[in-house]
Image (cartoon, rainbow, N blue to C red; front, side, top):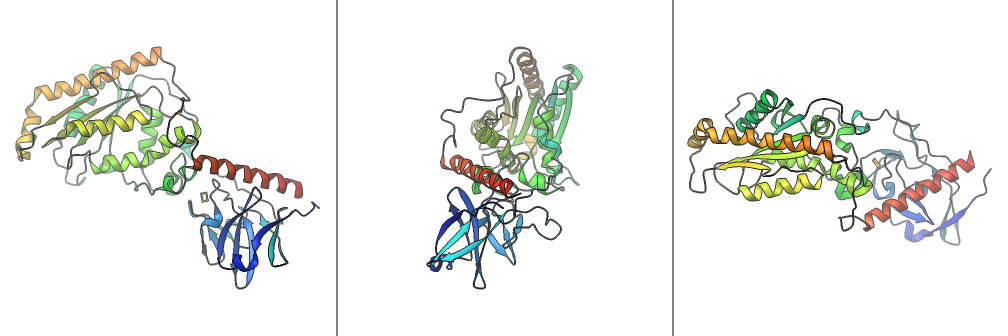
Length: 386
Ligand code: FES
């Protein structure tokens, strides 16, 4: 039997004021509950990816993790019915001289039930094959009653050219045909709560953002994104997709892991009015941030200007315009040529120098390190008590 290691949690009268609290005893985070006149303590580190359980909420007899809602029994640390094997350590408590003490040698050990990794959790590797061009249409429409879209028309012209004349493989994803949830802001809870693959993708088998991840991260060499201009910005579906790509950018921030390697992005932007340069700037900024490269003149665009509130004429203009079709073809030619050039000359970067990048050395990174250190401490203690 391992020796007890008692640590002071604080004054009993103070601790009674909060039904659930995250308290650090030395390096060990503890989720302390006070219910029905009794204290109980389990680990403050969630089994999933280390969420601070004591900062969550109580749901009956279970502590709900604030990051992704896993539940653990407030007294035993066991998972919900059916998941009892997935448990966090529980701790013995005692009161001495008005102070609450915890025995840091766990009464029960941590046990993680291993799950099959998500299919997207595989190593990054490009399968051999010809240059692959992914078209992503971001315009929103009623799929059952489709309308003519100028941005889609130019994207389709570019893809047809890539497959017929550039010996490329092509794939078209229309976001309007995919059912995927909005980013729910896990990153806002903690950078460590934003996981790869996205937490929603891991928890919701009906969410279809996995198709976008699969195509962008594993399949494409060239990513061609088309958007209409809506109120001076890219489409709402474009932003919905981009927010769900947080998890890709966050891997660079958190783990110095570059998931986009040697991929080229280019854009097709159309609108009845204007603001093309601002929309292009937004798109270039985001795709640069996740690690894409750009050919010379990385976007084509079309707008009839501020005073042209006549969309029927705009459609007819795009349908008849030889120059716009040739522009789309020329854009994909530049992107494919650039992709082939960098594939031959530039080794794909796996890590980047992050000096000056956001989150490098900020509090959340330090807290994550502390949480992991706490988890390691507990692991060592549980091992001692086996
Ligand atoms: S549910 Fe706790 S960290 Fe994900």
